[in-house]
Image 1 (cartoon, rainbow, N blue to C red):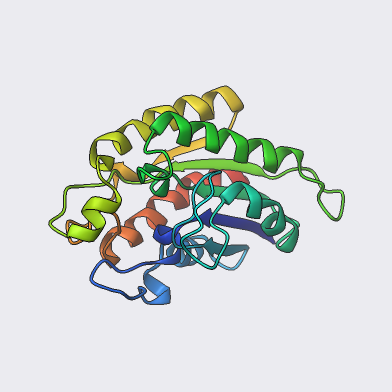
Image 2 (spheres, rainbow, N blue to C red):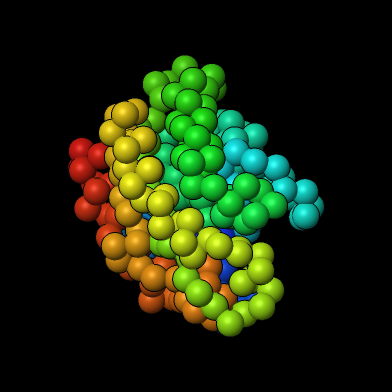
Length: 212
């Protein structure tokens, strides 16, 4: 059986913009990916609200630094055949850095971690699929609008930067913004239909990368 780790933030966790709440399990994109791939693949959902690529944010009890937690996740779920990383939206917060270039560098750090990790069974490093999250959109939600101020413009640079990084590092790439749109209810998160679209769209590419 092949194993796939989906490493992400609230878009992977399944935050409902109508919330606060969480989408039903069957509507989260890793669950849709699992259903599309079938029983020959085990899909692990590792999503955390507020997770960044590689930057600290101490406003919650959980460690949101994706680079610091990734080695633990890689060891916990080993052996792995593929790691799907969809991060960067939270990097758009002004107090994180609000800069797409920094998010690209954070993603590069995650690629290095996956490839340089000391896997517990001595297995080779898994393949990597970089996913650019859908761009943020304008919202009338004051809290989220201020929290991600300027992110609706800056986040549009993530896809081309991630695609270039994938080409440079030999990773797979997918632009989730080609199939899904963030909800204007908060400008950041996805309704159930859009998060399901990501899982369905990723399935053919994941099959190809796993040689199924």
